[in-house]
Each structure stands twice: as structure tokens, then as C-alpha cells.
Image (cartoon, rainbow, N blue to C red; front, side, top):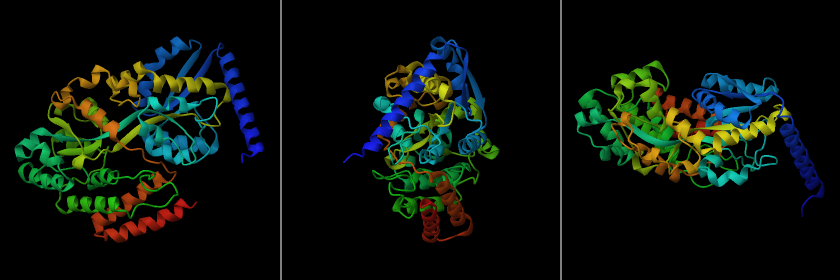
Length: 424
């Protein structure tokens, strides 16, 4: 039986939301400013879309607040908790979407006046699911995704006599290939053994499961995929196949420039970063392959959200801005072509750009494979403690790799800590 008071409250909220929408649209004739908080290179994508926005809304200016990745998300966390210095729209990386999805700091885009559900089938299914909470709230709209891929140095593989098929046949074959590459070239298989863990824990996730928790907040980190991920990471370290350098460090980028790191498992977007600024001098030496064992995994992605306490008068315009950035084919393709932001919008996938050879990858039409991967990636439920869980798992893995801690004990310790946190 439906509670009549609840139904009435919902109707009242819908009426208020519709009134705000009408008010915002009626006042858009006066000069307004819409504030967008973003991080590199999302900030550049936003700036590039301003001319199209101004054609639609000549009286509404766009102000871009740009911070470095970590600083941006720290600032957004603080702004949401205090309701001060809130932008009209905030960009969020997928790792932070789950943290915010379970709270009340972001507007539920599934409700009026947004009704994001009407656009659901236009985006890659798993991306939409990443912004959906266990209660069905949708807190953000997807703009770009990160299909998982294995980037490798073709010259190093050739010198070691290793084929792409050997590299990708299985995880064990991948590690064995790394040993041959190291012996023949001196290059490490990967930057850090943690990279192995990051991909393998994303393999074999079952329907209704998240990365670390299921829909009932049951902790999953003692499951077989975590055990295998830790075992493979330990093999990499034991055979001295990782450079022990963290992503985005100077040592990491130098490893790519000097050819001392042979492979990198990551999102497809890294090929663009390597070409544009990380290691442009290695153009033509890299290739892209599917992840080992035919695994399909998501690695990164960007979303736009509207803070609940942001100025009400700007919310309708904020939603229109998000629609421009996420549902406009031209804007999505422009971001793809200029910033390698792999689009979440499905109607872009028939564009000839996907079939074009990529010079950095030796003329390989790698986007075709990435598009195929995007179609196979399963939806993964998000949880508000995902970011914390990632920190816990990384800490326990370091204890395994650096101190020889037993894998079962490490995962059991992580399980206990996360179970306590999940109940909060």
C-alpha cells in the first residue's frame, strides 16, 4: 500500500522543482554566470564548449574553476560538507562518485526537473550505473569513460622475442613474458605490482556486486578475485618485474620516456597522455592490446553533478549545461579528438574517427578495440566507502609485497576494517 503522505510530499517536491525550473528559465534573459568546477583536462573540454553554450545562452557566461586532480576533489568534498563555495556544476572522477552517491550533497538527477532516466539508453550502460546509488538515486551524468587496455612497447617485445598473443593469453603468460622481456632488455614489465592488482580485482565481478562491497554492504575483499590479484602482484614483485614507481610520479613518466617500462594496464586515455605530454618521443613504438585472459574492465571516467545546495536560480541552466556536455554528439567527439576523452555517448560510436589509425600506436586503429571493450564492460555497483577501501587494500598489498605478510591474513585484516567502516 502506498503511503499518502509520502506521495503528497513527492508531489510537492516535484512542484517546487518545476517552479524553480520555470523561475530559472525566466530569469536567464538577464546576464548570469554559471560556475563549473573541473580538473585537467576536463577544464579544457569545458572551455572548448563555451562557444556552443553561448550560441544557446548568449546571456549566460561560463566561469571555469580549475584545480589539480587531488586538490579539486578535496575542495569538492569540503564544499559539499560545508555548503560553502559550491559551484553550479562539478566534475567528478568515477572513484569519487561512489563516495558522494550515498550522501545527500548532490541533487538526485533521477527526480524532476531533471529526469535523467529518459536519457539512460544513450550512454554506455555501465557508466550510468556507476552514478546510481543502491537506493536508485542518480547523482551524476557520465561524460567520458576508460575502457581498460594493455599498452606495450612493440620494440621491447620484438627484442625479447615475445608476441602480443603470449603477452595477453593469460595472466600467468603475461608474467612469464615479463620475465623474458626483463632478461632480454632490462625493462620492467610494469611500473608497480599494484597495477596488476588494480586490473585483476575488476575481473569477474558478478551482477549486483561492486568492486569492494555488494548491494548489502557485505565486504568482498576475501573473494577469489582479490586472492588471485594479490598472488599475481606478489609474483611480479618476487621476479623483480616492477619498477616500484607510482602512477603520475616523475619516475613513472621517465620510465616511459626511457623505455624502462614495457607495458601499462590502464584506461585507453593513457595513450593520448603518452602522446601529448608524458612520452611524445616514443611515438610509433607503442601498441594497444586487450587485457590478458580476455578481461573487460573499466578504468576511470568522468561525470558531471549538481550540488544540492548550489544556487537554485542556476539549477535549470546547470542541467542544460550538463546535457550539452554529455548528450551533444559534437561536443563529445570534440573532447575525444582533442583530449582523448573516450565518449560515454553511444551515438558517437559510429563516427569514422574510431576507425582512423593512431600514429602514436604505429598506425594501429586501436579505438575499434576500445569501443568493443566498452560494450562488454559490466556495470559495477558503487559504494560510499570505495575510495577508503582502495586505500585499505593498497596498504595491505604493500605489506604483502614489502614485508612478506601472508595474503590470507592481509585480506582478512582488510575485511575486518572495511566491515566496521561499511556499517557506519
